[in-house]
Image 1 (cartoon, rainbow, N blue to C red):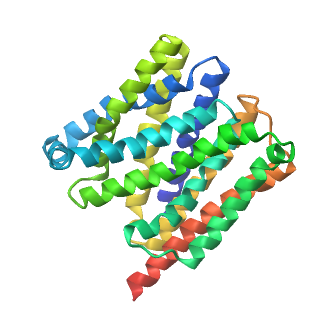
Image 2 (image 1 turned 45 degrees about the vertical axis):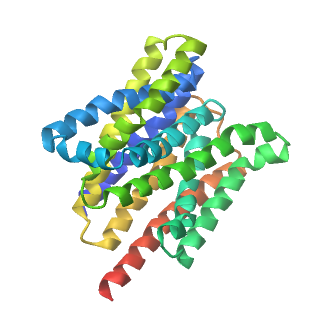
Length: 307
């Protein structure tokens, strides 16, 4: 536990680079199309190297050949329809606004449970209500000023991403079962989402030309910091405490600091406009709701284990 929590916090720090660098690329004139596609085009060879050295490709490629249509569909949903809308939203709102609003994915994950023959627990709904209240407060300024276009350009893409990410990942977990490791599954989903990213890159080339050196390097940073380093740190942290559901819940709740790291980086590094008073309250509610959600899941699983 002493090692797991610091690793979880470090993972949250590196995850924050997704929102900070996407915002930075927009401020320097980069297109969201390249921000999205380059992240996965750069991530793919890294995960290919990891899987090739540790597991080989026979298992994951064999699993893809068994259900090629499902792999292509749900990988595109889970990765493509998740990250492209997030990148689009990053062009229309401060980094902290996107990072905080993105946590609505926890709510969507809870509401999708019946699709996978799972029951929605009352404690989870309570945490979801806290998160939704926080997201509403984040958008209160735009709603009060009747700036519905700002809401549509930030919140609506995030809602699409928030549904697509858990839906695509859970569908793929159900298809894979225990056949593949997490690293193999992520590699396979990245591979099968490549047609989407290549098509998006071609659209970016047709509309904007080639990306700048700055955007290319920053996209590489997102791929390494968030796509590889943060992911591996978080998996390592959860592996250290996987035998204790309560400790696992505490480690998972460290991801709420992702919002705080993005808020600080956005204001002090990118000079984003800081939240107003309702906005700060909204960020606080979202962080609390994230922590409550993780702890509620941990307590429920502990009870099931005891029973």
